[in-house]
Amino acid sequence: MKKWRCTVCNYIHEGDAPPEKCPVCGVGPDKFVLVEEPKAAPPKKWRCTVCNYIHEGDAPPDKCPVCGVGPEKFVLIEEIPGDLPEKKREDIQKLLFSVSYGLYIVSSIKGEKLNAMTSNTFIQITSNPLRASVCLGKGALTAEYIKESKVFGVSILGKNNHDLVKHFGYKSGRDIDKFKTMSYVTGEKTGCPGLLETLCFIECEVEQIIDLDTHYLFIAKIVDGDGFSKEEPMTYAYYHATR
Image (cartoon, rainbow, N blue to C red; front, top):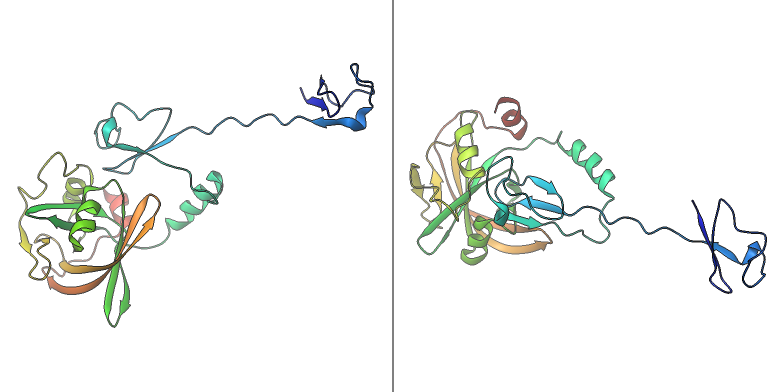
């Protein structure tokens, strides 16, 4: 039922149209305005900092249904002013799934500590000089290490590296030592670990950090690299089709 407010005395009338006469002050329908009902607040959204699963609700879930971590690994997603409407953003996101890109293990260091995570956001951005970028969620431990050390390494995955995607993508370095059972080299220029089971390893020194609300974009100079295998690289689409 619509509600109409008298602009003279604030009397509220309910009906499909304003009354012909206000019963309180006697003015006509031209003095009434439609009262807009307040929109219900959208549900809160929580992102798992380990696997990026999104949960909707007043609080994070007791357990992530994808990677199994607890509520302490979830962060509240803040709505960004001026961002696309949710439905439109989701429609465009589906279109972006057709963009071809790979899967990578991004590593960094903090003193003597090592950590790494699965990412699909590493790209080369210039060829002379050689520059690349990677974009990581602010809650990721690897992003914390990169911010402090200003270096990162990228191990490029091949089509047989499904186990590495899961090992470095579904667990947090805050809970386990991800490199304890891994075979890796230590980068000569950065000290970052590179996985020997992968196609190759690229070392990068950060030149610029851009704050993107929920993520950090690290723009870096490529300073070294080594190849380990000539297998075909794994794409994001291939991983989801064969996992």
